[in-house]
Amino acid sequence: MDSFIKIENFSKLSPYASLFLQGVIVTVMLSVFTVAIGFVLALILSSMRMSRVYPFAFLGLDKEGHQREKGFGVALSKFNPVSFLATAYVEILRSTPVIVQVAIIYYGVFGALIQLPSFTFMGFIKFERFFPGVVALGMNSGAYLCEIVRSGIQSIDGGQTEAARSLGMSQLQNMRYIILPQAIKNILPAIANEFVVIIKESAITYTIGVQDIMSAVNAVRGATFIIIEPLLVATAIYFCLCFPTSKLIAYFERRMSRGDRR
Image 1 (cartoon, rainbow, N blue to C red):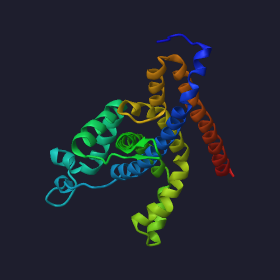
Image 2 (cartoon, rainbow, N blue to C red):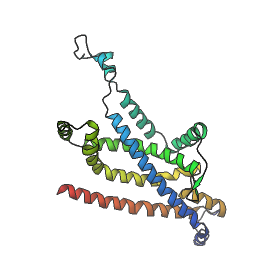
Image 3 (cartoon, rainbow, N blue to C red):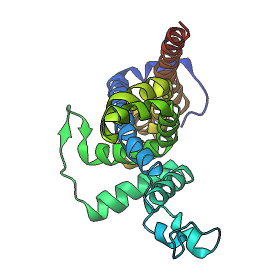
Image 4 (cartoon, one colour):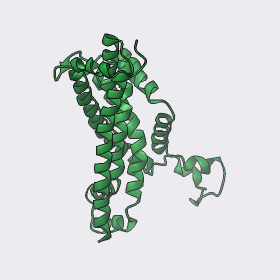
Protein backbone atom coordinates (compact mmCIF):
# COMPACT_ATOMS: atom_id res chain seq x y z
CA MET A 1 0.00 0.00 0.00
CA ASP A 2 1.13 3.57 -0.78
CA SER A 3 1.91 5.44 2.44
CA PHE A 4 3.02 8.71 0.80
CA ILE A 5 0.89 11.40 -0.83
CA LYS A 6 1.06 11.24 -4.62
CA ILE A 7 -0.85 13.64 -6.85
CA GLU A 8 -1.48 10.98 -9.47
CA ASN A 9 -3.25 8.85 -6.87
CA PHE A 10 -6.11 11.36 -6.66
CA SER A 11 -6.99 10.65 -10.30
CA LYS A 12 -7.39 6.98 -9.36
CA LEU A 13 -10.16 7.94 -6.92
CA SER A 14 -12.47 9.47 -9.55
CA PRO A 15 -14.20 6.13 -10.39
CA TYR A 16 -15.25 5.94 -6.74
CA ALA A 17 -16.83 9.42 -6.57
CA SER A 18 -20.29 7.85 -6.34
CA LEU A 19 -19.23 6.00 -3.18
CA PHE A 20 -18.21 9.26 -1.52
CA LEU A 21 -21.46 10.91 -2.65
CA GLN A 22 -23.44 8.04 -1.15
CA GLY A 23 -21.36 8.40 2.01
CA VAL A 24 -22.25 12.10 2.25
CA ILE A 25 -25.97 11.31 1.88
CA VAL A 26 -25.82 8.61 4.55
CA THR A 27 -23.80 10.82 6.91
CA VAL A 28 -26.26 13.71 6.62
CA MET A 29 -29.23 11.37 7.08
CA LEU A 30 -27.57 9.80 10.11
CA SER A 31 -27.03 13.23 11.63
CA VAL A 32 -30.58 14.46 10.99
CA PHE A 33 -32.26 11.34 12.40
CA THR A 34 -29.83 11.19 15.32
CA VAL A 35 -30.48 14.77 16.43
CA ALA A 36 -34.25 14.28 16.04
CA ILE A 37 -34.21 11.12 18.18
CA GLY A 38 -31.77 12.68 20.62
CA PHE A 39 -33.94 15.78 21.08
CA VAL A 40 -37.11 13.78 21.78
CA LEU A 41 -35.18 11.54 24.18
CA ALA A 42 -33.65 14.62 25.83
CA LEU A 43 -37.13 16.07 26.43
CA ILE A 44 -38.18 12.84 28.15
CA LEU A 45 -34.99 12.58 30.20
CA SER A 46 -35.02 16.23 31.26
CA SER A 47 -38.67 15.89 32.34
CA MET A 48 -37.73 12.81 34.36
CA ARG A 49 -34.81 14.63 35.99
CA MET A 50 -37.01 17.57 36.95
CA SER A 51 -39.87 15.38 38.19
CA ARG A 52 -41.03 15.42 41.80
CA VAL A 53 -41.81 11.76 42.43
CA TYR A 54 -41.05 10.82 46.03
CA PRO A 55 -42.78 7.52 46.83
CA PHE A 56 -41.07 7.29 50.24
CA ALA A 57 -41.83 10.85 51.35
CA PHE A 58 -43.88 9.54 54.29
CA LEU A 59 -40.73 8.08 55.85
CA GLY A 60 -39.45 11.60 56.47
CA LEU A 61 -42.42 12.51 58.66
CA ASP A 62 -42.93 11.83 62.34
CA LYS A 63 -46.16 10.63 63.93
CA GLU A 64 -47.51 14.20 64.04
CA GLY A 65 -46.79 14.71 60.35
CA HIS A 66 -43.84 17.04 60.88
CA GLN A 67 -40.65 16.79 58.85
CA ARG A 68 -37.84 14.96 60.60
CA GLU A 69 -34.41 16.52 60.65
CA LYS A 70 -32.20 13.49 60.09
CA GLY A 71 -32.08 9.72 59.84
CA PHE A 72 -32.23 7.03 57.20
CA GLY A 73 -35.93 7.62 56.66
CA VAL A 74 -35.30 11.28 55.86
CA ALA A 75 -32.66 10.36 53.28
CA LEU A 76 -34.93 7.73 51.74
CA SER A 77 -37.87 10.15 51.65
CA LYS A 78 -35.87 12.38 49.28
CA PHE A 79 -35.18 9.53 46.85
CA ASN A 80 -36.71 10.12 43.42
CA PRO A 81 -36.57 6.86 41.40
CA VAL A 82 -37.63 8.56 38.16
CA SER A 83 -34.90 11.19 38.40
CA PHE A 84 -32.42 8.51 39.48
CA LEU A 85 -33.07 6.39 36.37
CA ALA A 86 -32.68 9.40 34.07
CA THR A 87 -29.49 10.50 35.82
CA ALA A 88 -28.04 6.98 35.66
CA TYR A 89 -28.82 6.78 31.93
CA VAL A 90 -27.17 10.14 31.23
CA GLU A 91 -24.06 9.41 33.29
CA ILE A 92 -23.54 5.91 31.86
CA LEU A 93 -23.83 6.99 28.23
CA ARG A 94 -21.70 10.08 28.73
CA SER A 95 -18.99 8.04 30.48
CA THR A 96 -18.63 5.22 27.96
CA PRO A 97 -17.15 5.27 24.40
CA VAL A 98 -19.56 5.70 21.50
CA ILE A 99 -18.01 2.76 19.65
CA VAL A 100 -18.88 0.48 22.58
CA GLN A 101 -22.46 1.73 22.59
CA VAL A 102 -22.77 1.21 18.84
CA ALA A 103 -21.43 -2.34 19.14
CA ILE A 104 -23.81 -3.19 22.02
CA ILE A 105 -26.84 -1.86 20.15
CA TYR A 106 -25.91 -3.56 16.86
CA TYR A 107 -24.65 -6.92 18.10
CA GLY A 108 -26.38 -7.19 21.48
CA VAL A 109 -29.82 -5.68 20.84
CA PHE A 110 -30.52 -5.95 17.12
CA GLY A 111 -28.23 -8.91 16.59
CA ALA A 112 -29.42 -11.15 19.40
CA LEU A 113 -32.74 -9.83 20.73
CA ILE A 114 -34.50 -8.01 17.88
CA GLN A 115 -34.37 -9.19 14.28
CA LEU A 116 -34.65 -6.31 11.82
CA PRO A 117 -35.97 -6.81 8.28
CA SER A 118 -33.21 -6.89 5.70
CA PHE A 119 -33.81 -4.52 2.81
CA THR A 120 -32.20 -1.62 0.97
CA PHE A 121 -33.73 1.84 0.52
CA MET A 122 -32.63 4.71 -1.74
CA GLY A 123 -30.84 2.01 -3.70
CA PHE A 124 -27.78 1.67 -1.47
CA ILE A 125 -28.64 2.11 2.25
CA LYS A 126 -28.97 -1.16 4.17
CA PHE A 127 -31.73 -0.73 6.73
CA GLU A 128 -30.51 -3.48 9.08
CA ARG A 129 -27.23 -1.57 9.53
CA PHE A 130 -28.43 2.02 9.21
CA PHE A 131 -31.20 1.76 11.81
CA PRO A 132 -29.03 0.39 14.67
CA GLY A 133 -26.50 3.13 13.93
CA VAL A 134 -29.19 5.81 14.20
CA VAL A 135 -30.53 4.30 17.44
CA ALA A 136 -27.10 4.09 19.06
CA LEU A 137 -26.11 7.63 18.08
CA GLY A 138 -29.56 8.94 19.04
CA MET A 139 -29.32 7.41 22.51
CA ASN A 140 -25.87 8.94 22.96
CA SER A 141 -27.00 12.32 21.66
CA GLY A 142 -30.01 12.28 23.98
CA ALA A 143 -27.73 11.92 26.98
CA TYR A 144 -25.81 15.05 25.98
CA LEU A 145 -28.84 17.07 24.89
CA CYS A 146 -30.64 16.24 28.14
CA GLU A 147 -28.62 18.74 30.17
CA ILE A 148 -28.95 21.36 27.42
CA VAL A 149 -32.75 21.00 27.35
CA ARG A 150 -33.00 20.94 31.14
CA SER A 151 -30.93 24.11 31.49
CA GLY A 152 -33.04 25.78 28.79
CA ILE A 153 -36.28 24.93 30.60
CA GLN A 154 -34.93 26.02 33.97
CA SER A 155 -33.74 29.33 32.47
CA ILE A 156 -37.35 30.43 31.94
CA ASP A 157 -38.64 32.68 34.73
CA GLY A 158 -40.75 30.75 37.22
CA GLY A 159 -43.21 33.62 37.32
CA GLN A 160 -44.48 32.57 33.89
CA THR A 161 -45.46 29.18 35.28
CA GLU A 162 -47.33 30.84 38.13
CA ALA A 163 -49.12 33.10 35.64
CA ALA A 164 -50.10 30.07 33.55
CA ARG A 165 -51.53 28.34 36.63
CA SER A 166 -53.50 31.44 37.53
CA LEU A 167 -55.08 31.27 34.06
CA GLY A 168 -56.14 27.69 34.70
CA MET A 169 -53.58 26.04 32.41
CA SER A 170 -52.39 22.54 33.21
CA GLN A 171 -48.71 21.69 33.63
CA LEU A 172 -48.71 20.05 30.20
CA GLN A 173 -50.28 23.12 28.57
CA ASN A 174 -47.85 25.39 30.36
CA MET A 175 -44.90 23.33 29.13
CA ARG A 176 -46.22 23.08 25.56
CA TYR A 177 -47.37 26.64 24.94
CA ILE A 178 -45.23 28.79 27.25
CA ILE A 179 -42.06 27.12 28.52
CA LEU A 180 -40.90 24.96 25.59
CA PRO A 181 -41.18 27.61 22.82
CA GLN A 182 -38.97 29.98 24.81
CA ALA A 183 -36.59 27.23 25.96
CA ILE A 184 -36.13 25.89 22.42
CA LYS A 185 -35.25 29.38 21.20
CA ASN A 186 -32.56 29.61 23.89
CA ILE A 187 -31.06 26.18 23.21
CA LEU A 188 -31.43 26.10 19.42
CA PRO A 189 -27.76 27.05 18.80
CA ALA A 190 -26.61 24.25 21.13
CA ILE A 191 -28.86 21.75 19.34
CA ALA A 192 -27.50 22.89 15.97
CA ASN A 193 -23.95 22.47 17.28
CA GLU A 194 -24.87 18.94 18.30
CA PHE A 195 -25.78 18.32 14.66
CA VAL A 196 -22.23 19.32 13.64
CA VAL A 197 -20.78 17.05 16.33
CA ILE A 198 -22.86 14.12 15.11
CA ILE A 199 -21.66 14.62 11.54
CA LYS A 200 -18.15 13.86 12.79
CA GLU A 201 -19.11 11.18 15.32
CA SER A 202 -21.19 9.28 12.76
CA ALA A 203 -17.93 8.08 11.22
CA ILE A 204 -17.85 5.41 13.93
CA THR A 205 -20.85 3.63 12.36
CA TYR A 206 -18.74 2.33 9.48
CA THR A 207 -17.53 -0.32 11.96
CA ILE A 208 -20.97 -1.97 11.74
CA GLY A 209 -21.21 -1.64 7.96
CA VAL A 210 -23.08 1.64 7.59
CA GLN A 211 -22.17 3.12 4.18
CA ASP A 212 -21.00 6.51 5.41
CA ILE A 213 -17.97 8.54 4.29
CA MET A 214 -15.48 6.38 6.17
CA SER A 215 -17.04 3.28 4.68
CA ALA A 216 -16.31 4.75 1.23
CA VAL A 217 -12.70 5.34 2.30
CA ASN A 218 -12.41 1.74 3.43
CA ALA A 219 -13.88 0.45 0.15
CA VAL A 220 -11.52 2.59 -1.95
CA ARG A 221 -8.54 1.52 0.12
CA GLY A 222 -9.41 -2.14 -0.38
CA ALA A 223 -9.83 -1.72 -4.13
CA THR A 224 -6.84 0.53 -4.91
CA PHE A 225 -4.46 -0.12 -1.95
CA ILE A 226 -4.20 3.66 -1.52
CA ILE A 227 -4.40 4.93 2.06
CA ILE A 228 -3.63 8.62 2.49
CA GLU A 229 -5.45 10.14 -0.50
CA PRO A 230 -8.92 8.70 0.34
CA LEU A 231 -8.47 9.90 3.91
CA LEU A 232 -7.62 13.39 2.67
CA VAL A 233 -10.73 13.37 0.49
CA ALA A 234 -12.81 12.30 3.50
CA THR A 235 -11.21 15.05 5.57
CA ALA A 236 -12.11 17.64 2.93
CA ILE A 237 -15.71 16.35 2.78
CA TYR A 238 -16.15 16.49 6.56
CA PHE A 239 -14.69 20.01 6.56
CA CYS A 240 -17.07 21.12 3.80
CA LEU A 241 -19.99 19.73 5.80
CA CYS A 242 -19.01 21.01 9.24
CA PHE A 243 -17.33 24.38 8.67
CA PRO A 244 -20.11 26.09 6.65
CA THR A 245 -22.73 24.62 8.98
CA SER A 246 -20.98 25.94 12.10
CA LYS A 247 -20.63 29.39 10.50
CA LEU A 248 -24.31 29.38 9.55
CA ILE A 249 -25.20 28.46 13.12
CA ALA A 250 -23.04 31.31 14.45
CA TYR A 251 -24.76 33.72 12.07
CA PHE A 252 -28.26 32.79 13.20
CA GLU A 253 -27.13 32.83 16.82
CA ARG A 254 -25.99 36.45 16.40
CA ARG A 255 -29.28 37.34 14.72
CA MET A 256 -31.29 35.78 17.53
CA SER A 257 -29.25 37.47 20.26
CA ARG A 258 -29.61 40.81 18.39
CA GLY A 259 -33.38 40.38 18.51
CA ASP A 260 -33.25 39.75 22.26
CA ARG A 261 -31.35 42.99 22.84
CA ARG A 262 -34.00 45.15 21.15
